[in-house]
Image 1 (tube, rainbow, N blue to C red):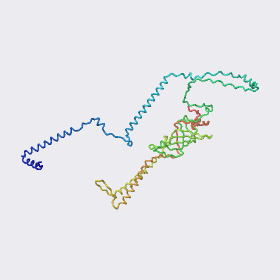
Image 2 (image 1 turned 30 degrees about the vertical axis):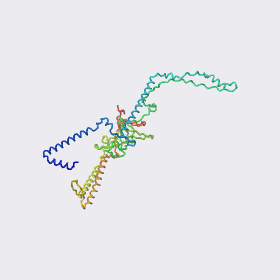
Image 3 (image 1 turned 90 degrees about the horizontal axis):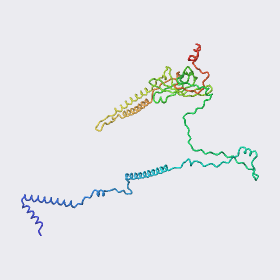
Image 4 (image 1 turned 90 degrees about the vertical axis):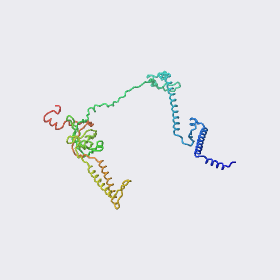
Length: 425
């Protein structure tokens, strides 16, 4: 055997004996042979790979999630199962309804026997002739007829009249919205009632004063006031109605622009000589001494003092904050402005902060109080004014025979001039 070391030494000596150009060709040839061998080896490896599977086979072998008995159920599967069950139930209901509708149509199409014939009653049996009045009288005078055995026999009572069956029918009647009115008797027609028409007026006196509010819910919730009628009412055509010394209840509210309190009437109450009490609802308004609707009063507002207190407390609160600011030094940096109380001025800063915050809260309280307050119209008691009715009212009491029909002054003037009391003459 040849020695490997000797063979390698001979190859080395051979390579050294070659020219440089020959050695370059030899290296290039070796590299080319290696590249060609690498290409052929790669082709052989690609030919040995298995053929690609079709798309359907790949999809069949895709991974699937298998839900175990203890795993959580997918909400989509639950929803699909519930929807399927509901659809089945709806189909069953629809089929049942169709079947019932078919049965109803079959019953309606089938001929039905006449209900009139079925409702007719069978004929009554022949009635036994009852005893006449003569036989009854004879039986009563002679007494009960004795039987063959000697025992008296009680006669049978007369049979009731036969009941004739009535055929079914439809009863019709009319419905009316009219209210039944009791017939007026002669006593009611002769007895008159005192009626005060709209436009009538009378003189009244204020039994109490009024602080009429001007803001808030004053018009929807007015303040009450008591009035007393000073004279009989003045009716149209110079007639009078006896309502003197009666009481009236009114309610009023104030108006800032006109500085007047507007009163409206609510009720009128009287007590007659026989002790009968009359209480009626009336509608009207009050006329002041100047002949205008409403009563002129004094406009009083307390908001000015409250606002002045709010201003003073706000100023003092600002002074306290100034003391607190003077005892604090501020340093500005990239992170912002930082305030630091200077050494020895902690008491000054504390007093300024406390006074400023307390007076600021007090100022806010005064502002809130001023918003809730509103001006009022003061009306004194004892003023004599007039009231005018805007709607007629029936007092429900009989008219007096000696009731004034005209004013006394006008009657005296007509009598002095010897003229008739008829205003048309």
